[in-house]
Image (cartoon, rainbow over all chains, first blue to last red; front, side, top):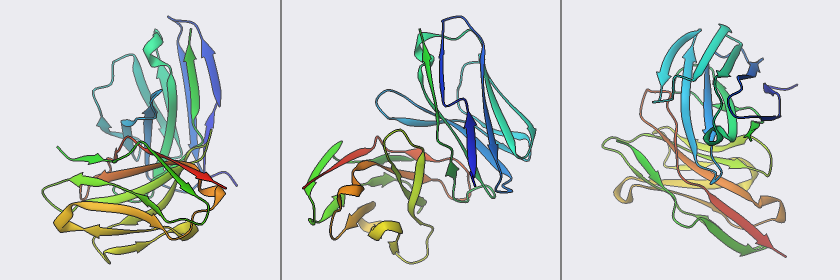
Length: 112
Length: 113
């Protein structure tokens, strides 16, 4: 049983396009997150949602818009993709704020 | 602002040797501390966490870490390395009662036969 799943696993697209990454968790957790891992493996939080409410927004460009239709899903939509957006994006979830975070397998985004 | 420093971006050990991965944090109050492991092309898996209970924390796969407030350190150790331990290891800090994880830059562990 997959706890935190992401689709797609790989995403290759051209500059200027708009794309979405989906995340679902079946753990019954209240809080979900998006992290970006760059080419040097550095991980940085982008957003967190608690019960569909935005809690953290870490100086991420407005082109990135998270959407949480329900507690089990947190999608990431990216407009006007740029070369610098190429990275691995990880979704995570935790039962409550400050609890252990469980990570999805990641989505490798490549912008050409 | 809180931060985490991992000394050594690469660590190489022989199979059966001691593994020591270093992590120092900066925080005015004791934070929550975590070690995560990332195997190639996979997501992050929690190894262990410190949340102000026992200072010696035991995790999965034989790993453990000791919280030392006087040294602001949370080093990860394993007495005997296995080939399967080869991976990227991340130390992370979470300010108390927040849900923000701040990661170190990672340490790649190589294990030689």
